[in-house]
Image: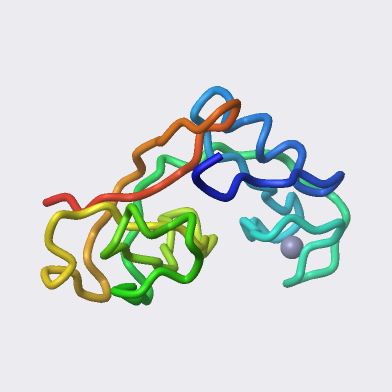
Length: 133
Ligand SMILES: [Zn+2]
C-alpha cells in the first residue's frame, strides 16, 4: 500500500459506498436545507434529525491550501510537491482533499476546482484540479 486509505465508520459508510460509483454524497437537512460534512446524526444548524441525501456536482473553490515540499509521511514522498486543501463545494460542505497540479505556484484561494477520482485498491478517492469557468 503506497497511500493512506479511508477507514469507514458507521457514520461515514454511506459516503464511502457512494464513492464506489464516483459520487460525493452528503446529508442535507430536510428542515433547514443545510448540507453537512462531516456526517452527523443531527443538523449542526437547527438540530433536526430529519435529512435526505444529495449528490454533489463536485464543483467548488479552494478555501485554503498548503503546498508540501517535505512529505508529511513516507507514503506521500512520491507525490512531492503535493497540495492539501480545504475545498468549499457549491453545495456548502468543506472537505479536505488534494489539488492535483503540475504547478502549485499557480494556486490561489477562491480558485475554481472540480473533482477528479483516483483509484487505490478498492477505493475511489475524491481529489480536485483547477479549471477555468
Ligand atoms: Zn437543519
